[in-house]
Image (cartoon, rainbow, N blue to C red; front, top):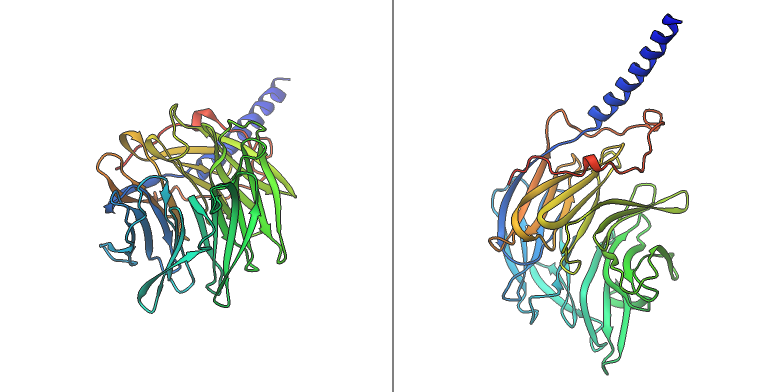
Length: 400
């Protein structure tokens, strides 16, 4: 009997050590360093295939700037691409790059402008002119052959009637083709990506039935719309600040806010799985908030978001969500944060610093020995893969 108990004890110890081993091997840590880009109140960032960094931002003088830092360079170069948006609040320039590293921008400020670099000259076009008032967030993505796709919130018709449709346009043979994706009160917040067939997909907020998060995909003929997460509550902020990424298997993954709750939704076997990752501080302003979803080299999700007093990084380590602070120190909320990820899982986070008014980029490099590991289901078969450990929701060492 004694021998059996000892054997059972050894088996329990071995099992515990095995799970400890998985947890330690999966743990990750980034070393963060920040640099200034220019003075501004919003930010958007993209890393291209040649490791050049592109940033777009709005200034307090209501100008839109584009900034570039070439791979290996130490200096940022900036250009004014929109002389005036006539307002410096509720204006959010967005950015994408094509396979030739050419930047493409959109910005909504009563009208919708698309800006790109053509023959070394900045060229701006108004999209859907004369259609009424276009406001809040736009979204932009570029196909492999360089065709831009834009999404936007069409708030009012020319006569002043509320319209509130989520609209989409793409450039076909030099002509912008415009469609409504969804009606109701749709698309105040949106995110757009292009799939391997060159078709657009979008996540967006919808208020027609209360606070909802919706997902739309173009099948070549029409938009197919599904509800991802519905509150049936008109005062709900569910679906705000959404960010969409397609995984290599074609499944859609979305980060977003539901009031103070940061959520992550993804498709699995044809169904939507919704998780609560964490909560932000009381007093968080969803209109200034932001989430950016990223996929690392091991297909694990990362979410960068602004909070009161910190920019935070939530990541799935193969077993549970962990959260660290990217930067902290300001008393106010960090608004309009964006991020990009490199093939080696280096993170680039753009954010306006509420203390000194500069748009900055924080670079996070994986600390040696803490590389990500894709944990197999066999290794964690007795664990709950969707359970969020509150013990992991804490700040790590912060390096400004």
